[in-house]
Length: 458
Image 1 (cartoon, rainbow, N blue to C red):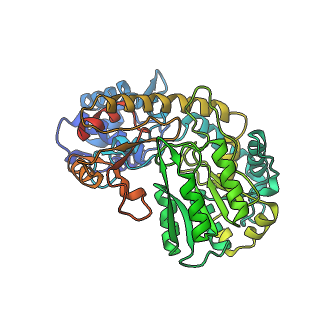
Image 2 (image 1 turned 90 degrees about the vertical axis):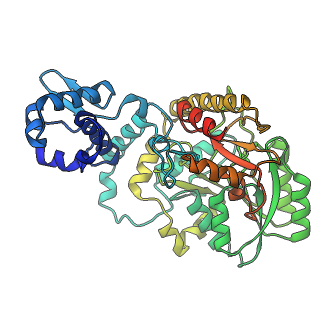
Image 3 (image 1 turned 30 degrees about the horizontal axis):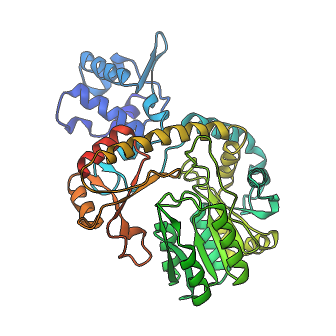
């Protein structure tokens, strides 16, 4: 144990500063990197001093630093156990946003993602493992999804006003996997026109570009939402067979499509044989009090895709397609389906999380995200830069307009030189060039990090 503990710390002695602080930092990094699992019981102070060739006083000082900072729990007579501090496990912010993650940045605001709901997730993992025995005696080959998970997802759709049976659900390894499978199965020809929003989710743009789709952008703005007249003219004049839309707290603008506009889209799709793929990954991130979701964008030619990545955790590789039962059966026969399916244990974990405790998890997440959104909005409102924005009613980010004097790419480069990574508007543009004066700022970071980030931008 002692040698294993020392090996887990790496080459911590080479760092400058007092040995006690370096040792404490090494323990923290080992826990975060997974080299020293949370819950590991440490050797005694005397054993640690001997193993690490340190004075006992240095070891005691290091352990005191860890204990005071929440990384160590000591019980008299039982020794000390390393753990993650509550300030990390009780927040929605990923640890990496505080430590960089994009290149050499000290602060990373390029990803609009959350950390897992720590305690709820660990409990779900434990229950999933207990339920896994029956799976282990089966083949483990890809299926449309575990029956319990499909039933839970169908029930959620039905409760929210869209009657759904389990056989209308196909579980995938995420929303991007769902879109990839649909594009392959619907056999969209290379170069075929596809309606997309401008701006829109870069992950979807990457998938469509790899298929050499001809993208037909429809403007979406924070203030006015979707340009429905432009959408109708595009569908009538260009004859696309496919559209990809994000009607619920649109990424990145945060716009929320009205019930009337949803009905217009469904009717347009029916009249012009247009298949509409609706990305609902943000739907549960309604930050209004209380949440007031619009009806699902639905219809005979509408397919919904969803994911646990934004609501729960990106590391939970579970998404789904909600479509007609006949289409789901066809998708199961697609050779890609096995490659894009979610592992059985992941599905078990998702089923536990989508069970009775989901409401409590969502309420806690919305509370924290709402506070972080308001904090970021307050900081931006205090700037005397001429930048404008509308605080969104949901989602994970603010879509910032910089005005004509500042380009987002230039500002992002200057910010990167000061240790802050941000995403400029052209990243979200179908043509890679427009939206030059926009910047996406996620509010998934802690208030402290958001304060530092805005200070750097200013």
